[in-house]
Amino acid sequence: MGVQARLVVYAPDESAAVAAMGQAHAELARLDSILSDYRPLSDVSRLGREAPNWVEIDPALADVLSEAARVRAWVGERFDVTVGPATRLWREARRTGAAPSPSEIARARVLIGADRLEIDGSHQARLREPGMLVDLGGIAKGFAAQRAAAVLRRQGVPICLVALAGDIAAGDPPPGEAGWRVEIAPWRDAPRRLLLLSNACVSTSGDEEQFAVIDGVRRSHIVDPRTALGVPGRSAATAVSTSGAVADAVATALCVDGAEPRGLVDAARSGEAPVAWIVFGPTGEIRITDPTGMIRWDPRATGAPR
Image (cartoon, rainbow, N blue to C red; front, top):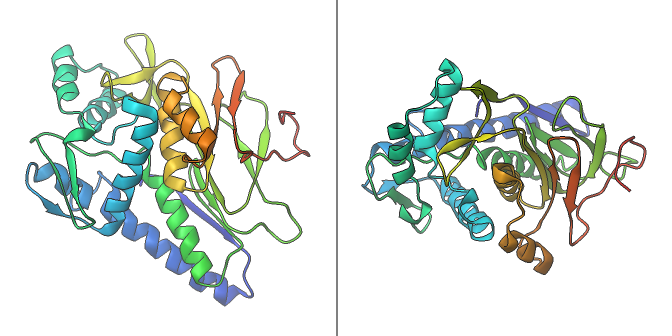
């Protein structure tokens, strides 16, 4: 999925640790072969290539698409996995430094729409129009991190942490600790803050590492599905959830315009959405929404909100 995978485990002995991590890495590789649009033979790539025909898909992809639809119901059009046509335009723009033309943006916009992505149970899916593309960059890493952590638990190693760049899944806490200490660092010049995480997932999305200045405008690698444009300015958000896919997707959606969708707030307050989040302003201010007390700060860290 284009990032380095880091696994940390506490195991009875070295052989148990090596065996468990080998199984977890195998699961990450399997999910990459299914969910990555960079791989031409992946299920995601075949969906676009074979549109509008039905494509047999792995149950893991069906699960990701189901989670994506759940998040979309909370945040609206800020999150849409059919953003692929626009994502490809802005990948090229970041590479060349030249903005897509208005006609290219217009063509991409008409091909975005999750209502035209159909799933038949857990075995088949299709995009209803040729040219549509699925991009799971805003949800797949969180999903995969949690799946890898689940493999480690099944292998008898419940004290574990799996990190795929900004997407982290934690198992039981290390011995004698209240949780895994996870640094939240949306930007290099932001105050150092540490979360305590156990049996939960955290995702941080933003443009610190992946952005380009195009026609004098700083644009993120995150694309607004509503406009087919790379998100302008500085943006970052962190989400904590019991679901890695939900944490990843919510953090991505909150980076689109920094607004808190009413549907997401209501779902979090009711318990329907198992998620809390932090939105980072461009000048360093933070806004925390945590109706059920999911966010735990390490009191030993400087800069932790009180």
